[in-house]
Length: 455
Image 1: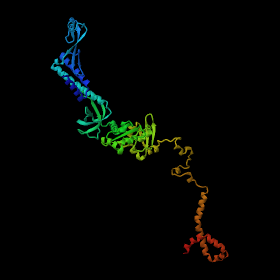
Image 2 (image 1 turned 120 degrees about the horizontal axis):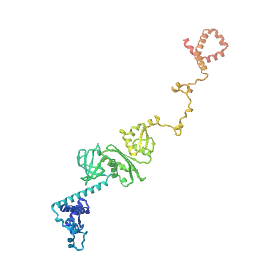
Image 3 (image 1 turned 45 degrees about the horizontal axis):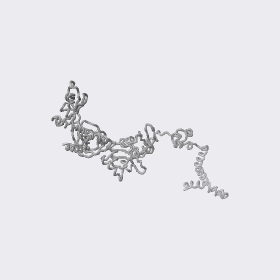
Image 4 (image 1 turned 90 degrees about the vertical axis):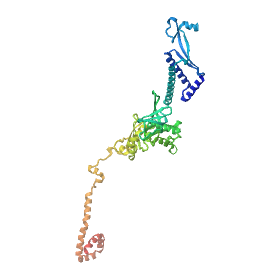
């Protein structure tokens, strides 16, 4: 009997993964409950089970009182009866009597059984709670067991996990018997056992998946410094390396993208941006706004962590992202409030104030060095003073040009007179032939003008 009892305890220990000591204590407590059910009280009962042989001893303790003070047979024993057992007993001593469990009634035995079953269940629940409470923040694999409305119940082996509607990803579809990876958010004790609350939308799920896929993260060479996620759409992950020879981004991406692709497949195609972490806020903000290129980062308030990022005009929409997603995730992962402005918005809107100490300020003349234009209208039209200033002899030059224009007509009139008095001019020409030759050379142009009239 005792050997069979010990064998049953050991078999139960293997099946339920409950230690032998806990099972022994459970049976002891069950026998105490059975004694109480049989005798009505258990305040003076002690149960002892030998861990090696399996011998069970139920000991009932009674106090020795004077014969005239004796009241309860369950709790007291008269002095005269005690001295019959051993004459050394005195008033106030205690005697333990052995009570055999076989003397318990049917109801007492049933009570003992119920206590054993209940305590075993409680021990199992306690072990499950202890196991999963230490695994908060980890990623586990479970099988979808059933659905109740929008809530999904997932089998995790010894425990049942709860995936509420708020922790599900709207783009995903869950079917019975599907195996999925989930993030353990919280573990609570309940009357029916521990409740394990799971999530598919928590950023910790992405972090846990990378810890599974990337050995460098498991070894502590690469660290995930920050993560921001909009479940089902996009995630930004900032990583750093403790070894200068290890590229943190390359380690997470893997050969031909194998590591990051495994994570993307588990997340049903969710986009993942892996960036390098930096303690320099300027470099960090440059990195977190990828894939957009940043021209300049201006720290507005270091205490409140406010910064302005200037991007090329054609990349403003890329930096902001669809519905502001890119800059929103960038702000979360970096911990900075980021204001995105295009190059034109920042430099052309007058927000960029130049002072004398900037390198740009030297390229511009001081206001007092600039000469005011003589005529406001001419300045507005784009003319300078030099262009509008007239020379002193402008009037004389104009008159000379006018005489030069009128001169051919006068010469033409003189030529007509020469032709009309040709006979008289022949004698004068012969006398002053050299002078006439010079005159003809000087006035060749005038003769050419006259030719059309001879025709």
